[in-house]
Amino acid sequence: MEVKDYMKLPYTRLVQEMNDESGHYFYGRILELDGCQSTSDTLEGLYESLNEALEGYIETKIENNLSIPIPEAPNNYSGKFVVRLPKSLHQRLAIEAEKEGVSLNQLALYKLAL
Image (cartoon, rainbow, N blue to C red; front, top):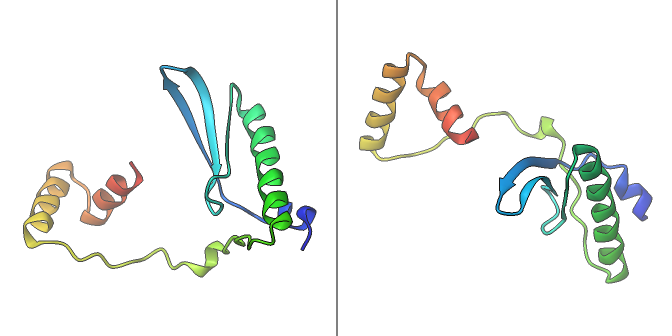
């Protein structure tokens, strides 16, 4: 595959709005490609700079004959997984969910999304 072919693939872009000692900006990364990231003052600028970072990342990998991960389709995932936890943590989460008036599943989803 060539760079243009990789650029068309549906890589997952993770975007975060940042406010820290550097000021206000947007940070983005390509989830499937370790180290492929960028920042910008605007969302539009971030999208452009992230695409530039993606292109450079792919070019570098191709030039060095290194493998490039391909994004997986979301339909490869069921949306379910099993987690084993200590009984005491299960109890604590169940009590918290009841106090909040939500299901244990909803509480766990909320906590995982943080």
